[in-house]
Length: 128
Image (cartoon, rainbow, N blue to C red; front, side, top):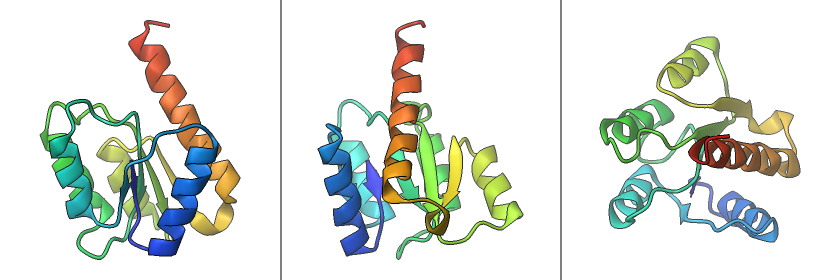
């Protein structure tokens, strides 16, 4: 799942992930992401989360996510335009697996990071 409120960036991320053989649930808001999670019987393998969304922020989204037992184990990679230490600490305390600055990484590298999270989750599920 990709949660990104900048439409063109969301489409670019979605395209890049699909080119890497990943299924994508694209969401332009925190509310849309929660709605999609509620509709799905199985949670996504990972969430790519923009910190600043039009309707919420990363901390509020993570709090909602962690309230549900069926969503509590979804690995979340936060990708943002800013990263002050307090914000990063708060997101990591809420269970984010990583916090990356958009400006510091090319899209290919960010895709690799999300693939790594998915692979790690699948290995744990398979008892490896």
